[in-house]
Each structure stands twice: as C-alpha cells, then as structure tokens.
Length: 115
Image (cartoon, rainbow, N blue to C red):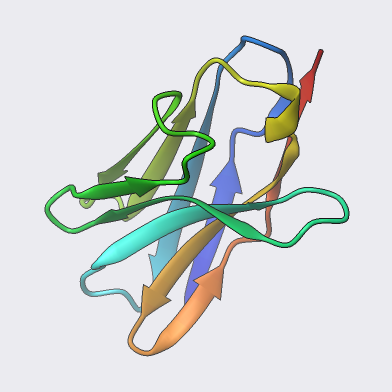
C-alpha cells in the first residue's frame, strides 16, 4: 500500500510564492516519476508538472517559467515551488505517483491566490 501526504497549500496574494510537498510512504522501492496536477472549481483536473528519475521535468505551458519541481529520492518526496502566483492558479493541487501499474493520488491541498 502506498500513501501520499501533501502539505504546503494556503492563501497567498498574487505575485507571491508557495511551496508544496508530497511525501510517499509504504511499500516503495524505487520511484520513476512523480507529478502534480490541479483542479479548479468547475474544471477538469490538469497536469501541472512532472519529474522523472534523473531529473527531467515537464511543465504545463501555463506555469512554465514560474513553477519548479524537484525531488528528494532519499525521502521519497516531491516538491513544487510556485512563484509569481496568479489568481488563475487557484485550485486544489494533487500529488500523483504512477507505481507498478497503479496510479496513486494524494488527498489534495488547496491553493488560493487573491488578486
């Protein structure tokens, strides 16, 4: 069983920054990829960023240049540093872990950006 625990969401003014963390625990040997998705009210869940073993990253066009994603393999943790936040970034952010044919999700953490 794999568990993902997220932290770091909150309320911030436009232009501000937040850092999200997602720690994976349970029966994990080696993680190939982790990522972050988000879902705004009334919208579909969308990819924000992913990172694979070796450090290659991928970002949605809407966040490229403002967000960075990193991982600490020793802690099975992935981070999302969000800078220059905009009201459009307001959403519930979910950690994502594809592992051994299954996809695991965190419980979600709310990010609210006020204008």
